[in-house]
Length: 452
Image (cartoon, rainbow, N blue to C red; front, side, top):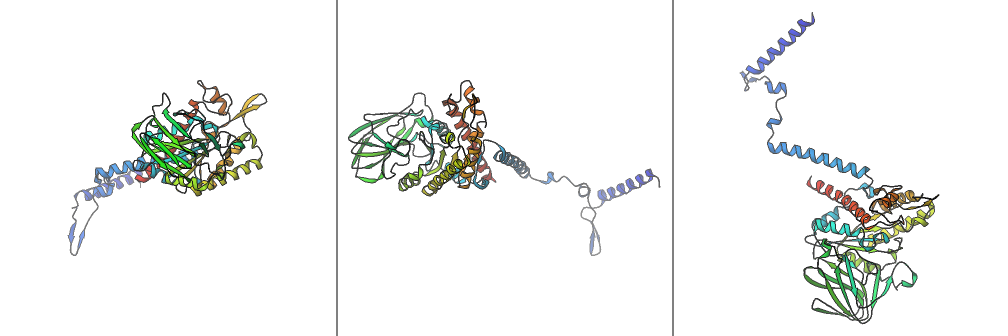
């Protein structure tokens, strides 16, 4: 049979079936005990299924497709971006308890502590994180401060009528105290007699940290009298840290207080009643291996009573020049693991985020280059932190990896100082912004999951 005859036959059959589909009653034709039915044209051609869906169902489908695409974008970032946060066993729910607390910060204040070496002195990096978090979740004040701070602070200034005797858990041996009682700042100040201290914002600081509505005085020792804002509190002697709290007018910017007696001061807190507080705790010259020397009861009391939900540990930079061999790196990482475990025991409600060292340069054959062992050092810290149940942010990779410190120094204006180690104020703000934006990507992913 010729091809055109076969085609005509097929078209004829289709025409007959189409006619049956069109003219055959939809309700069928009764034939005794049965009803004869024939498929309709919509059945044969597949119909317009979308037309049968409601507008709400169509909208839900489109939103689901958008959410799926967004979820895939987040997962791509969490897997491949150099600025991502590494999580223990890649658990994307690791920070969920922190994010739940942030969402409820309007009811109960959430505290974050940023411990670090000289890279965070003067409130560098911490200030950017604090300002961004307080702008998003509420809160105010600079958090817990030493009295009297020995370094300039970008956020707040202090003045005092007397200099204290300082004791610190790190640095020169002659500054050590007894019994590991340094409090949450890893330092304390001792005063005898009557002293007046004034706290006021740094000129130009218009961030939420400028304003606060409560002052909390942390002290221990003999009987002590504290006067603030027209109120006097007399506290009996105690070996444990006492929290002496004064409520202040809303949006207070400047406060003075007078304290009398022979007493240790573990710091003064300037906060709002709700929102986010972030403490900046720099330790110049410290490698981050001192926490196991701090009194467990003092740490536990502060972390749990103040609702500390995130502890950031930013260390490693001071050890890079002296930790070169595989054995030295391994021993340092083992010590860091012990610190993480110790802090987890004292703050079971907090997550720990370890922030590794930045790129650092030294002169090699007359040229400033990245320390040769720095990449291996960073990788070992990352593995150690995650195995210890902490998250890890790779600042070295986030800022550009090998050779990036030289580029940061050469920027105009410079983002790092000519020691090729420390960031300038502008560079520190950039690092703080990068860390904040990265953390908020995990928060947004958490909210997207929660919506699902």
